[in-house]
Amino acid sequence: MCLEMLFGVSLIFQPTLSQAQSVPSNHSPTFDEVLAAPDDPEINTAYAKAQIAAGNFIFAAAAYERLLLGQPDDDVTRVAYAEVLLNLDDPVTAGQELAKLGTVTLTAEQQAQVAILQGRVATKTAGASK
Amino acid sequence: MTRFPTLSVIVMLLAAQLAPPASLAQAGGAAIGVNGAIKNVVQMKTAKDRALRPAVLREAVHIGDTVASGPNSALQVLLRDQSVFTIGANARMTIDRFVYDPARGSGAIAASVARGAFRFMSGRAAHNGGVAIQTPVASIGVRGTIVEVLVGEEAITLMNGESTLRGQAVGADANTATLILLRGPGPNRVGKDRVGAIDITANGRTTSVDRAGVVVIKGPNADASQTFPLTQAIEQRLDANLTTAPTPQGQRAVVAEIATSLNAALTGDPDEIAAALSRIVIDYQGSPAALQAALARVANALPLNSASFATLMQLSFLVMTSTNAQSVGTLGREIASDRGRQLVAALTTGPRPTLQDAVAALAVNRAASATSLSAAATSGLRDTLATQIIPSSQREPTNASPS
Image 1: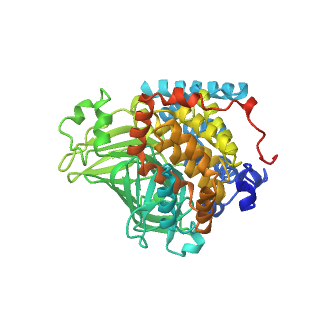
Image 2: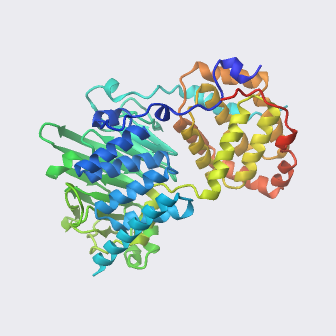
Image 3: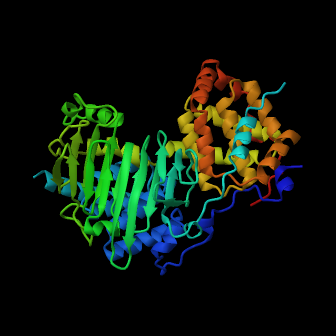
């Protein structure tokens, strides 16, 4: 008798809850929803985007940081996090996050996005040193 | 007699009898926030606890709660006003005060940090300057900001590694030396966030910092230093204590391999389990920290039920405590034995442990594991185990269900 039969559960890995429950693209989660599910990628990504649109970049940065603690291989979130840091005029940390992506294989679109952000980092850094 | 080192951890987990994570609503009005993210080993002590115990994701946080982190670990506490404390490696912090009036968007926060690294990102309560962070030698008043602090020996290590700060390490106190880093937001930020600014009070004197930079307080009765420029090298060193890095591309395949191995192990096929254990040991021979991180990531990505969690625990400890190839093979088979099933069944009757429990349990055996794996490396385990892996072409079909 295998473990699957013993416990009556599927032992084949299933999609995570967050993967299974998609947040509608037009839904802006409330902060209470974030508090209830601070580790949910869908909710927190949607929340971060809403905060960016509202001009609250620190709140967006906090959401992305939270997601990256749980899923450090989420390259899309890391790029978004770097962009938010740039908007917070923090080119040093933004550059740090972009540099971390040097060890992974990005899509052509991501590579182009990273190149643009690295250009912004260089510009800001040069401006700050003058 | 066959060894079964996983018994100790299973007993430990059963004894822990950890309650399921309490939601903020369940915790009542006194809750001031939640554990928003946990990386590796983080412990927490609330008013209900007699000692530190593993922190739980989504668990409510209250005034007076203390959190403590281990090496390569981090916790993000998300407060009701959207302030965020990120506690990095080897840190200990207590939230002493939290008052927040959502209607007015004002409030007050006070926290004390005894050691280690942490980051504070201000929320709505900080808009009126109501945030104070206490370290052993300084008080930091926050006026809307992202600030990072390093207290103790690691602050000295960082200073010694940076030419611009090395002089500050001379005479610095190993227990209380404090490095304060204002990151931003900078004056050229976009959006509504206030420009970062902090007031540092040390030795009775207050220093204001309103541009990105680094300030050092060497210890008790020491003044705050001048503000040094924030460089990429300094941020990189502090960053290592507070954030994560992606798995390099080459290692991502190994992590996926572990997931596949665990999946195969869960079929209950003894040979598959033995092969899975062998592959994990070979992939991570001599590097228990990497193994721990990989297992944590795998577990994070998986919807573990009690049975699969128990198997993961067993796999982890088998790998980290086995010292020879024979024990790996034997114990791998034992997981699927009746005795193994009984232990797993016993585990499923109690509260479901969390990933954090698993990682914390792994950390308990950190030293022993390092020793064991080191010994294994010198005894040629890798070569021995390599002969035990069953090529996929020779394996019997498993009884795994199609997805």
